[in-house]
Image (cartoon, rainbow, N blue to C red; front, side, top):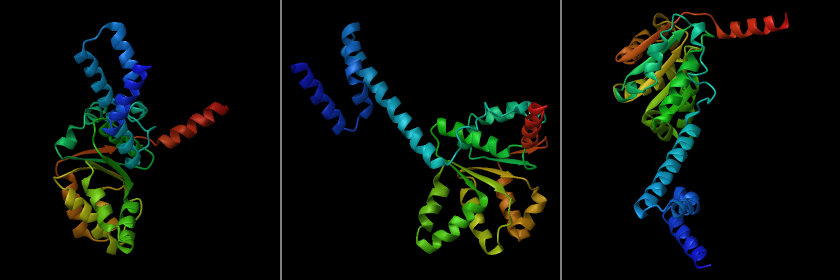
Length: 254
């Protein structure tokens, strides 16, 4: 009876100190320590490991929830055999996320359907695993949100989020033209993150076309200049995965 009361007192104190990892494992660790005659230091070490593991897990869940990444689009699920011209070793090397420490960028260029977004998402997931804060956003959505946030007073909150994450993934640049009076908002993000935080860009447009996308050749050049400086550029020239999937369905019906 006394042991149960003492255990509850300790649990209450751990809760007061917000040591939820220790709370979860205290009873089982205590039993394990008794059965294996662990020293006090070994017992404490196990509890601290549990607390550390719990905090890392909670941190990952929070960062993943905010990242807007797709958990199914991993490097393991990417079919490199369907894109033989893509250097698999270079992509896997980028998954170490050293480029984030070096404040470098990645640009995936290629026709629709070659899974540029999948690769960007997969590297984003690897960054999350390594403790980085990541945000995935469509280029037009980003610009539209920046514009609309000026009307509801949330502009600086959104701007801070876009500038503070360790890795910003801007998807489908060039999917739609960006209105000329909105281009400045896009440029602000690129300029403020330049040589400060990493960006991954996916686009189905060559740089020569960006002047038309942004409606301003000079501003487009300024954006490109900041993106390509200190960047890894991949031009994916393979076939569309969507066509591959369609062929698979057709073959299965034969």
